[in-house]
Amino acid sequence: MPLKKGDFILINYVAKVKEDGKIIGTNIEEVAKKENIYDPNRVYEPELVIIGQGWVLKGLDEALEKFEVGEEKEVEIPPEKAFGVKDPKKIRTIPARELSHRGIIPRVNMQVEYNGKLAIIRSVGGGRVVLDFNHPLAGKTIIYKVKVVKKLETTEEKVIELVHRRLPKVSRDNIRVQIKDNTVEILLPDEILTISNIGIIQRGIARDIYKYIPNVATVRFIVEVKKEQSSKSS
Image (cartoon, rainbow, N blue to C red):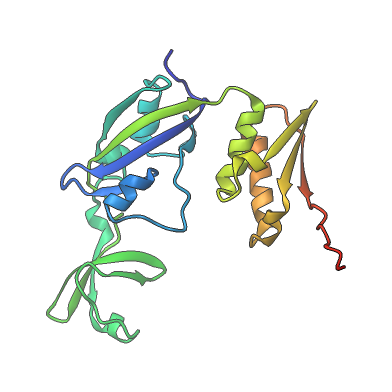
């Protein structure tokens, strides 16, 4: 049975640029290492997507509605449904001295911030610098190789994945959920107490649950702190 908008699914993917075959993203560890894009601070595992919520590129979001659980296939996404078409109005020429006064020696393909926006330097010469404020992948066709690993059926599974999405280094096995009437209780290990900005993260989790899980009125977090075993000296 094809998937539909609102379905919670876990996917594996490899994304590449059609024009040059360059891999630009993956959540598969072996592929990341092979393509020299491995990030040791990232957790490589199936990624949560709620279809129709704009969590992935528009073209991929639409294509996922034609997948079935366990299916793997390639999806070709044109620029207008990927990172947009190149807009000539987002390309500006400025005097090179505007960057040199900031201690920046302009070089082609360097990323710089200018007037609060990021840009790529496309050319340097004659005392002028051409800045491109388009997304670096604007105008590119993106090919995704995607596999739908799982569809989440129960509310408990969905809550656990929403929690894990914001706390990826906390194992799913260490996240317990209880649902009573319209209250969701989330039991978390004490390791979260060492995470920076944990309060902001918890608020984000609660907002996600209110938005994506129907009829929830209260989200309650419980942190389980285990008693330390003291050793008696003889």
